[in-house]
Image (cartoon, rainbow, N blue to C red; front, top):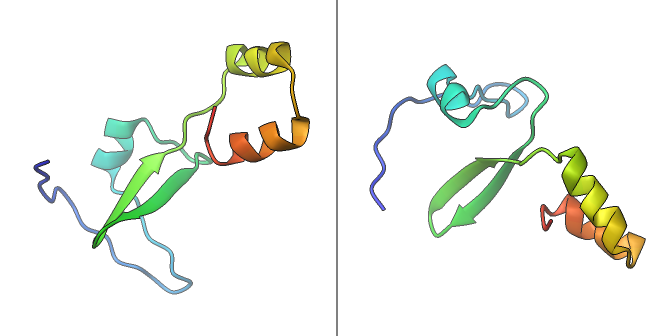
Length: 79
């Protein structure tokens, strides 16, 4: 996979950083959205967490099952 640096940001006091405008726009990330961080070897991978739709929630309820397990799986982005 080829990747090119398109921007950079600095980690500031409190370990905060800014998501560059180009990246936010390209990924459709807005204030209040969550980003998921993971490591792939020596690289950090950041992905926007998919927002749940009414259809997603309706499907979860319709299937039934163990609410505690479903909640944990949803928190990990497993739906």
